[in-house]
Image (cartoon, rainbow, N blue to C red; front, side):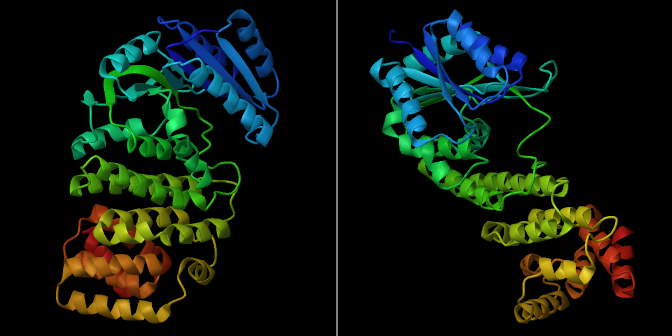
Length: 437
């Protein structure tokens, strides 16, 4: 055992053999060989354990650990794993550590390039670019490169923050100072305690960025990420957890805290983070609608959970995009016909606050009579969260869209929903026709 420049960590669970071998060999074949590779076999079955033992027998830099049940470490196993991590980072005084998924890979010069920059800049964290490939690994889908940036204090512009944010979303593609594990270890596990499962990596990196001062990003792709067809996030296995709605809000708030700590929480940064949250909700609703395991009733009820998110309603009142997203996804849910009887669908989807909704619709009507289009849009957005399929509200929405000359591309979802649900309402039909023309 010797002091290493870096310790690589990998968690493995039934990874296809060719991918696993590629990942391990990408570490072992680094041009800077002074490293250790700690592999946690997370309750794998089949040949995985055999493959890992094979590699450990060939290379003394590999250290194996196994917990028996996938994603269910006992307290004893957890203590043993962290004792192992401690031994190879703290006791051996390894300078840095890196993380790699068992189906991804690093470029041969990842450690050489990253370590040189880290030591030159005395960096706490160095970030590189990532190349996204398809499941076969043969087709490049896109490349994500951070800007060239070297910080010695917590200060950056909003545009730099937005450019860096994509690299904040994962723990791989980075070289961390090893002491960060012990100085801020609670932050690395805080995501789990707050039940941020889908996005835990992002939560942890955002937390860490608020603690470090020396940060470097390298606009060079040294990491390859394999996009697998069977994505866990897509929610094709069983019911979607309501926690996923809350997770988007937690990540938004964590990102705001981080931007504030770097003195760049201005409107430009907020607009960017609103966009990030918008895409989170878009992907969540898309996965909901494509989920064959959930019943129509569960899908409609989950839609209500999304609308109840405080941040969703807040952003909806400041931006048309959230309301358009609701319309777009509701149309997918309702086409070719409502999944449940309309009255029952509305009972699940609408909040039980008719008095408040009646007041809101009267206020909306008064604003429309005065051609106060922007004020009307804000009131309308709040009502969409309350009762998105309400017949009177749909009429008032189409009236506003026609009155202010809203682009049909933006209005067509609401118009199609109104026509689909209330084909006998001639007023709605005329407004929809005027928008189409």
